[in-house]
Length: 505
Image (tube, rainbow, N blue to C red; front, top):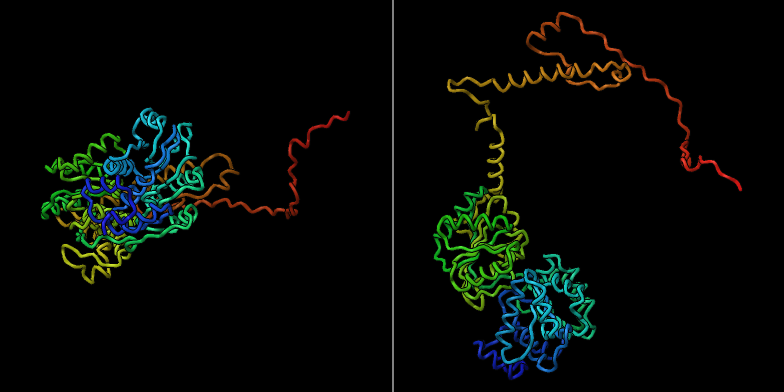
């Protein structure tokens, strides 16, 4: 089936042909007819299946009639990250070249003045991140009561980033008669609740099992040590072993992205960095350099894991095992897009075995190891236990491998640690003895006993203590206390305000 059977307008079909699209993907084939007809759509598909065009093309068809008014946009698209929002804006420029539609991109890291100028002229399409959209609304620069089409893209990523309260607030500001297009790669319970609340009799389109990777991606695992320096060396060795055209290297933390970026630079790799703390101009420049082939490797956080359309990424390296199993599917989805072959490798340290089992459970398959299958002993004990044993041995500073005390060069057991401990005990004994003499018999009577009360077991102090008798300790007899009456109300305590004299007039 071609795009001509999906109900799109001639202008849109002309732009699709000029862009080189010939056959719609399964999600486009099923979602576009419902969206053109004006129905709400709930689309569930794995990453890299063409979800963006599934809502861009019907929106262009429906927005051909009418015009926008100042500060009252006609359609709204919400994206979780700036990069995704900018990418959707590029799709509107490519596929909407035959339309005279005004597109306003509202994202952070850009001045408010340029965005206000577009909104004042009247925007047909607003593409925004939730935070910046609410900023414009609260400043009185944007009205949402004219929205005809509302799109929530990458809804599960919105959940991970904590945007669900913002999404609920924005949806309550929109008119009830709007059309809502809701797209997500996975459907956790919270996202399902949101869809049930704001979609009206939606057409559910699910073209692949949730949280599954594309069949064209080869997935592999490689063992790596816990030590960060040795782990980076293992990554470099893996990158040299495989014929890599270009690759994205994912880390869990932004700090590790910077460390890995500098390490690869020092070892002669053409690499760039991408994470959420970078300036927006730097982030876009880095992405453009990676798309154009100016850099071959991109060290990135999960900000690059969702929805970025970089068509020809040959490899994905997971430097860290992702914390959430769903993130693994989105990370490796950056390769093997549009039917191409892809390769994804992940470094697994001993402490990552639990997270790895969660990923394999989600995928419902076992991932193959590069350095041979896992042995039964490793399954029983885990190569986690061997690593923990190494860490425990490293923490025992005064014991060697056999569990014996350290010896000198002649094989004699070293005793200086024990002697120092005895000297410290003597000092504590003297100090505690001085502290106990307070001069107040009542205070000394209830003072707890310290180490100074212990008798020394060796040395001159032990001999002296054995010759003279120990002084008798004064023990205080407990005084009998009368039984306390049962407390009622405020008890014996009378608040001060009740004791004030009352002046009678």
